[in-house]
Image (cartoon, rainbow, N blue to C red; front, side, top):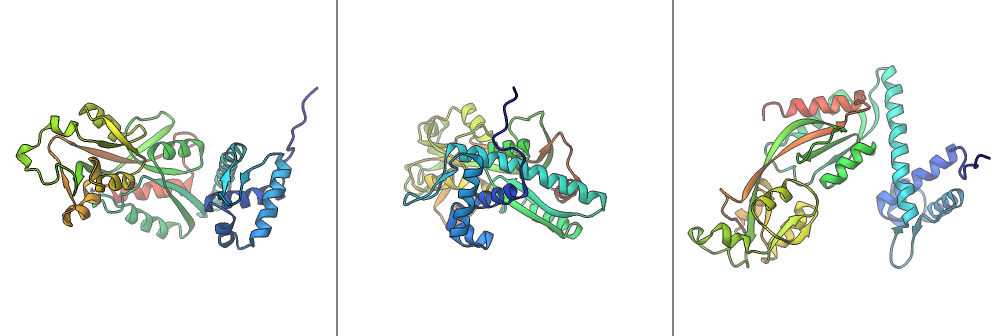
Length: 307
């Protein structure tokens, strides 16, 4: 005898409740979601309770300790993201039948790229807005692995990441490069050391902060024999630990320039302890990009064509 599904058919009411739930998670709690949803907190709470009763699971904990998803809530949120992404793709495909570019477009970008003089993402968005003024972009800043996973799962329709290890599930379109150097800051024993006194062996003895997921940063540190003493998951976190005066770490030249010009950071043996990141736009290999995604992708490639 076939087992009856607990949920049954997904109704319009279910979709409304899931959208409320998704907004609460994205905003980090009920209070912050009030402005996003334009409904009061008690109504939001009732909607979440209705969804929990409908699904038969507890989705979140709320109290003095703050808002937090349960394990089941994390699974429901991930599934809801996939479903909403599929629905948006469907809407885009139907709109394409009428030659309209409308709806939303979700993109994830690796952090600290806006100050890179080789990065022209802003130019690409300007061109895209001229071609698709009714499309509403939604931009997230995430680590490399989160962007790749999100694009593969359909939660993000495009990602912009430093290249490291290619996936057969993704298509890559080169955009720009980023120069990375190893830095220390005021308070560090090597900050005032003469350049001639520095050596690779000396730098390898320094406490080093590295990125905690597979990335060019991880590969280069391994090649240069640097042992990680602290772990960061974005460039901002690396900068904070470098600025503590206790660690050395790699930062983009364009991002560190502000600290260098203020006299609070310096690069160390830049001819040796350096690497170049190549950034690419990524989209799912299958299914191919819809017309909205392709329009933005074309704008990205065109904006970076001449460096």
